[in-house]
Amino acid sequence: MRRRILAGLAGLGLLLAGGAQAQPAERVTLQLKWVTQAQFAGYYVAQARGLYRAAGLDVRINAGGPDIAPPQVIAGNRADVVVEWMPAALASRERGVPLVNIAQPFKRSGLMLTCRAETGIRTPADLRGRTLGVWFSGNEYPFLAWMARLGLPTNGTPAGVRVLRQGFNVDPLLQRQADCVSTMTYNEYWQVIDGGFTPQQLTVFRYADQGVATLEDGLYVLESRLSDPAFVARMGRFVRASMQGWDWARQNPDAAAGIVLDNDASGAQTEAHQRRMMGEIAKLLDTTGGGRLDPADYERTVQTLLSSGGESPVITRAPTGAWTHAVVDAAR
Image 1 (cartoon, rainbow, N blue to C red):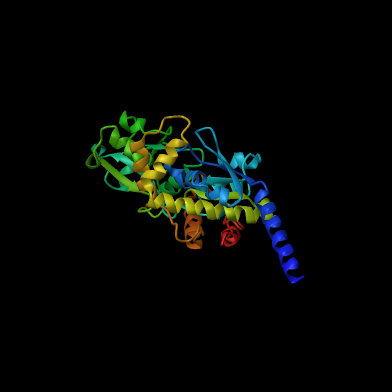
Image 2: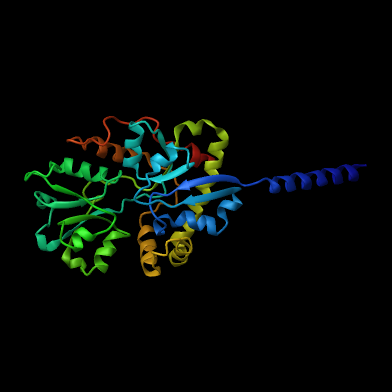
């Protein structure tokens, strides 16, 4: 009798296990901040290596572009989670799109201002009266905070700086239409180098060195969805698998670059550029904390934005409820 009972329980266990395995994977839509490139390698790696599938997830990764604003995408319920810079996320939150940071894979900022040394620019004080290329669509906020700290108006007056609305390239510098342009350590800076400049011909200001570094490439969801325990659990599995993907990409940069290229539908990326980009991205990551946001980094970003003041304040008050550890805790 006991053997029959045990056999029956074992059979029931197999049946339940088979039923659990038969359950369809839960869909998660991720909206990237920019086009397919090594900046997002961790997510593509997690997908290609089956990490999302092993977590019971069916993840759709949507590339970004110049006409795609992640806060607008998620506000329109076209994504569950987005990659965004914290200044843009906090500005969106103050304007009515309640984004919440659930994980922060990027610990360090890669934002720089790259200038032609021949212009005589050596220190931030030399920026007065110059033409500076600046990205907009939410990327201008760290720049505005820095100019406010320097006391340089951005309205084009001789006492300040002239802002050139920069496309997502470095043509204004290469064509000498601007004295400086916005660059990332892992991307546009190398476009300048490939354009014929040597490092000795450039003056580079890293925002981190200027005391105005803000957090980049965090994962954000809508606040209302965090009241659903099932959604929090699903995001926990997503974050865990994503961080595993980032850790693998950091340790295998060339292979990770290859996975990115496999997902580049445009065919615009090159192997050499993606390998170089992945090497630089690895320097910005924090893969030891499971994506856990450091509150001190958050406070530094908030204070930088609050101090922007001037004619175009980024945020007017300290946010509340703009980040949570609940998802990262669920991931553990």
